[in-house]
Image 1 (tube, rainbow, N blue to C red):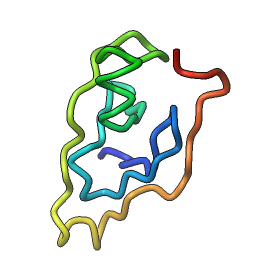
Image 2 (cartoon, rainbow, N blue to C red):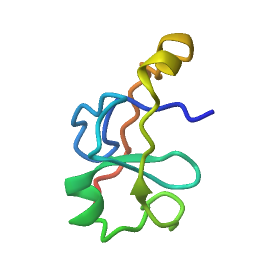
Image 3 (cartoon, rainbow, N blue to C red):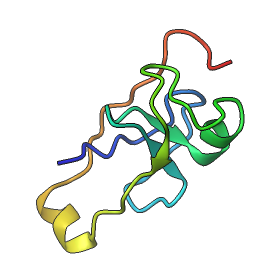
Image 4 (cartoon, helix red, strand yellow):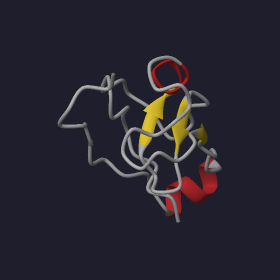
Length: 79
């Protein structure tokens, strides 16, 4: 099950579980649409995988399986 991380690892922008602006790679590295499509060019800076739209978990499932509250941010800037 996806963790649904709450923020962009580059700019720390909030990405609630219902956000259509979240992008992830196969390792669930999470970025906002602006960082993913802009500075990152659609490629994860952590694993070099492609970044795709993160699925939205339906509200009924979210109540039973909540999103993560652990914020993750890269130690080095996204450039």
